[in-house]
Image 1 (tube, rainbow, N blue to C red):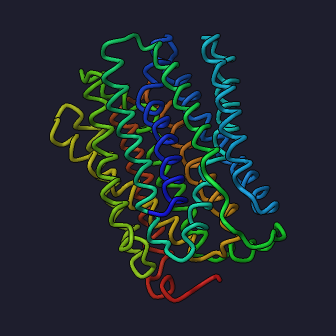
Image 2 (image 1 turned 120 degrees about the vertical axis):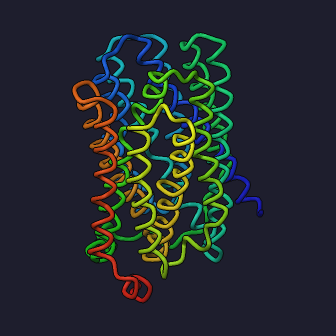
Length: 385
């Protein structure tokens, strides 16, 4: 790989190392603070609410000034500073404030780095998977190491680990460099392309797929702990899904082909229906749970690769900051928020089984959208450039 590729790979590694330390274990930390499930859901989905709007603002600013690294670096620095607030409070309202501020700054960076990566790879976009895979590796390393640590130390030690990974992300942000970009554009230039039916459908499918993952991202670790799995086993199961994701990124060229977009999306959504039903109803059956985690390679990995690659091919390079931010905001932000909040309400009253059945229903709705809205012929021949 070229030097810019290694810079980006390092950033992905440490960024997703934070995610790997945060996502599986922070809900367990909150549970240890005696917070009710609905309050845990609020805190764990608050980031999705922020991601619904703010990445689009950051993306618009980035495309307007023609530079991305200043915003990426400021995002990392301010996130590292704000996180310190967790060390000084266990009050729910203050936790809401700290969490909102953390995600306000944290959400800026990933869509911009995604756009920056494609800018560096303008003539070799299929190389994206080989760079992005380092994020998955960082996630796996963090999940394994933190799970091992928490089986031997108090859950309160998680805060120090999370702050350290944020600090490493700040270091990595000062390593990456901007790629040559086209001149800044008017903010409304991309609007006509956004009205294309296939773009709307892709955004809606991303929203529904993220909503389907809402219960998983908020309550999966709590669900496993309730069925007797220890922290190491929980970490192993999270890691297994990301290992499957790594294999998907390695095979990105096939998934990034617009000719197969409809088939890839339909397969991902169909497998998501199966996955969430298994997680909800068969958590005591280890082999089925392992199989369900392997499907993460499809329900997140393949779906994400196919979607961001399609947007990269449909829109101009100078539009990528706002487009990737819009996609991230609507899918991970809006969809994740809806799915997480619904899970927070159903978890207490209806239980894990029904909560994950609702997740499967979101995926089924996405499958119906793809079936009705996408045409393989249109997707492969229509271009927005």
